[in-house]
Length: 84
Image (cartoon, rainbow, N blue to C red; front, side, top):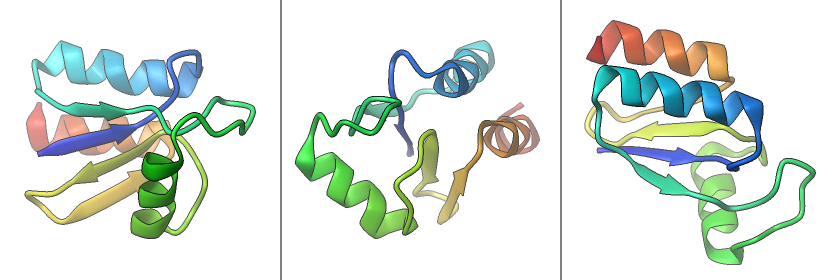
């Protein structure tokens, strides 16, 4: 399962969502905070930082492959390599 921690108005998150849609991959989306840092959901924000160790979005977790990635370019490359 793919889980994307992101913000709707973040252009980097948009790149990742567009790639996921282009590939037809199902995923779960979490909106822990706004791009400026204001936390929207304490639970998902804490979960994101516990899993990845950083307070950064976008953040992709691939539970099937036990991988987690930050940085939209790295995430897009990963998706193309494993799901394209």
